[in-house]
Length: 339
Image (cartoon, rainbow, N blue to C red; front, side, top):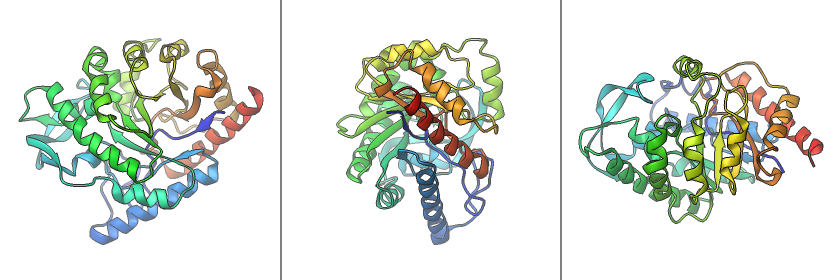
């Protein structure tokens, strides 16, 4: 009851990359960088295990960014001539690569870190991939001329890598779709269809993560503009409830998301965000347990997974470690309180 997991990313150590940044520069190159990525992956697996988490991940230590880490292994994308483009409905500008030709995988994308993680933990292993709709929102299209067509092309490539990750021994493949909270009508229309194409044929557990973004200023400003109730989930949750995706990760603690929206996910496991990623204040275990208790009004206890609101990448390592401990300790309290 009340398994614990992270949404995906964790801070990169200062010897691996710039700290407190969403798009950090690497501190090494070549073989030295590969070794540093491996060291950081093992460091965070140990930290998650030491905290007592039930489901662990690689912390996305081998990826500069959660979307572009996948795109770097895709043919048909021009990284040499990036352009500035407004993403997430122009919430902020980003330097993005351009899709200039038919999309194909160059080969395996995440074999190195997935196999490394699998070899070094006996816990359930979750691996994250960007969702097709969010990828479409994070590249400039100079070839397809139709975002649905391009999303389905990316979904096919994601599916190839997801099936390979499953063969690597990954227990849970999660697709990250923050764009679902921005383009709600399109998400319910074709976004979920593209997501299901990405998950096609998987027999491991499938998940989708939908949040209100990392704790960077552009996202904080956007949240402050959304009013006293954030009802974006209301648009897409019914479509996800009808889908084959088994787990849904959502933002909850310190947000204005009405808790009753979780009831729209009947039949799904719900990764309830009980850790705020937009604040360095460390949650108390009691706060974590209380959030789980409120979720119990709308989700059966066997279907609740305690999780972080989003990734912890831009945070300091010290704060992230303490938040992981609060997550695990709070779930322990909840197990005693609500058994």
